[in-house]
Length: 368
Image (cartoon, rainbow, N blue to C red; front, side, top):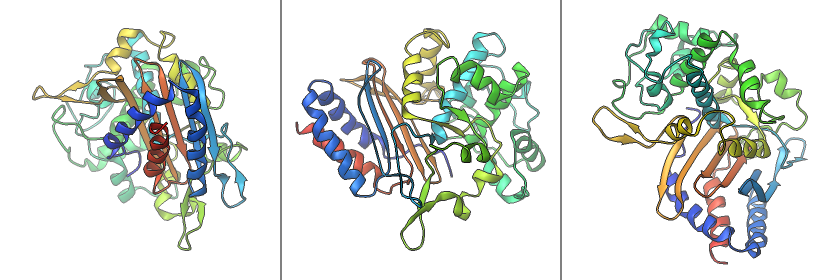
């Protein structure tokens, strides 16, 4: 399954605490951190890291290759697939629609979409508490993979085959790419405009995110500084992830909108991060709702808001984050929103020891 939250994130957060508590008190920490990141590259990690305080970059570096097959070095300005980090942008589009009075969070999805699943609110779509089945499983079984599926095709196949719900709406948190397909389709329904064009007009262009877009395969191929995702072949060499059968869904589901498909740079993501501290896109009240846990039917809470996982640390305050996982890619953005500190990490060889490599860097910082 693509676009999953990294399950061992809690352990990583402890090291983030050590990392951020040391980083912003001594500039002498930068040198060992750079050494640690270079050592990660020597062990095969390929990616870009960016760390910022109050919107200012305090460390940024790239290691590895944009293309392993041509030995093209990776640059910190290269463009990566974000995978599920894209979901926070879809959620923002919905929030902007809500502020314009085009929809309400407690509206039911069936009000806007012809779907066989009833009683699911937009709030439950945003927070992964909708209980919907996995659309990819249905498409994988029935779709003609010589064609490229869109949201309309996905909705049609869900109506045609009607796989059962996984849970009652609001019963529990269960990560749902289907819910975010629904959300993008609802945005198109209430605005009458294409989701991609609207994302550019409402978010990417106003924020000056010049390297950010929702690109087709051909559009990505035309971008010179696009960092390809890589996986190991049978001989242990990194090759373009598109060569693997397991990656085929990125082609035949290549026109889907909502759960992924945004590609961007670390610096563009910092622009996005900083825009969330002002009211350029939506009000502070709306953002606070996005960064708040979701109440379930039994009165308990799920620590996922509108496109963001939520953590609370006694020293660092509220932390919001999201990860992404696509063939060859692993991505993460972590925002310490009470301290305006940000970590962005984009990896393009799905490195099996990514977390270990990050932990190594953080451990070096903690000792200085």
